[in-house]
Amino acid sequence: MIFKLTEEQLAVRDAAKDFAETELLPGVIERDEKQEFPTAQIKKLGELGFLGMMVAPEYGGGGMDTMSYVLAMEEISKIDASVSVCMSVNNSLVCWGLEHFGNEEQKQKYLKPLASGEKIGAFCLSEPEAGSDATFQQTTAEDHGDHYILNGTKNWITNGNSASIYLVIAQTDKAKKHKGINVLIVEKGMEGFVVGKKENKMGIRASDTHSLMFQNVKVPKANRIGEDGFGFTFAMQTLNGGRIGIASQALGIASGAYERALAYSQERKTFGVPIFEHQDVQFKLADMATRIEASRLLCLKAAWLKDQGKDYSQASAMAKLYSSKTAMDVTIEAVQIHGGYGFVKEFHVERLMRDAKITQIYEGTSEIQKIVIARSLFK
Ligand code: CAA
Image 1 (cartoon, rainbow, N blue to C red):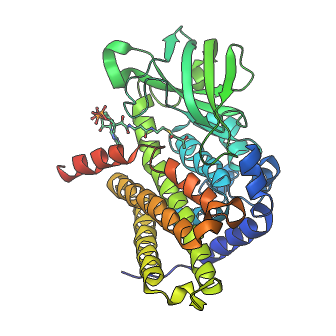
Image 2 (cartoon, rainbow, N blue to C red; image 1 turned 30 degrees about the vertical axis):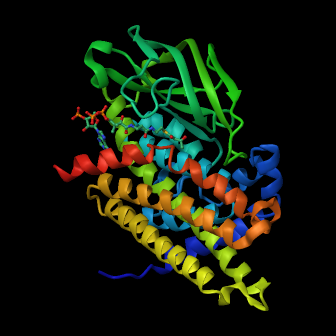
Image 3 (tube, protein in one colour; image 1 turned 45 degrees about the vertical axis):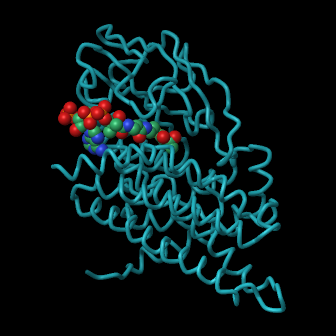
């Protein structure tokens, strides 16, 4: 086993770090407070190739490996998790799904603008009554020969308003249960497709999370990805990779908070010494650093397995389960180390603590990750 990153991987990490510090850090507090979607920043991120990192260059992507993606996600998430969730969804759930399961026509029409960052995509699985229980799809896609008629509501959709291309999971044949589910490419502007209310969230407040309504939307059959009934498998396989993205986001939130706490502990004095001299602070920092390193290794291992073409569903679930708990625990300790300063916005750690929570919920709650891991143990 070689614990060494390549020159290319290190260059991607450095580029992401530079971008995050120069382009995302200024204004991150205000965007969070105003719930302002980072339109200009996302556009630049796309121009740098971070929205279609793993897509083949012939489709407008960066042709990078998943390990580079993990490294970039960590750096972006250290500064702005609202930006990194948009990046994660576009890369892992939308571009990856289209590249691996879409046909040539769909790739030319939809993948190219998504991979180059010209357009943003959204992944629409969750519903008011189908979050963890994702097979319980109430959105219907009725088969009408050469097209489907789509009806239903999707909830908590990341990039809900900023996206122009939506991958919508819907039930075509209830009798077939999860084998009767399809995934359709829906474009903003299709008649009967309405973007609903924006959620007022605890964290990742600058990302735009919306409900979506589909009222008799006519979707050509040419917009179905894969064979009839492939939709649920599509969602599950896509989420296996998505979970690597969110695990890396959690890792970045944790390491961003840790780096701030470490720096603060050397500046801040109490009882005549920097607080770093107090053993309780040292122990906190030691625990934080150890858990972050373990999270990083889990994320990179899941990415490595994916890059090697091996099964990574268990590894991605483990990475997400562990990294998201690390993000929650580390950010709470970072606030504690900052004391009163940690409770106010200027020091960033309170935002990171609020942002951490969602990583234990979206793309499969921690409880769902345990189900995925437990089932894999019996295989
Ligand atoms: N990888 C590949 N296939 C999988 C899989 C995985 N991780 N998990 C399940 N499957 C397959 C099963 O093999 C089975 O296929 P077959 O019938 O062909 O054998 C099929 O899916 C159904 O699986 P189960 O019988 O296990 O179904 P279940 O209902 O008992 O459990 C579940 C399924 C794993 C709990 C699933 O519903 C799930 O993952 N739920 C969480 C949904 C989720 O992650 N939502 C995230 C929303 S997207 C989002 O959050 C994006 C964002 O905004 C950031």
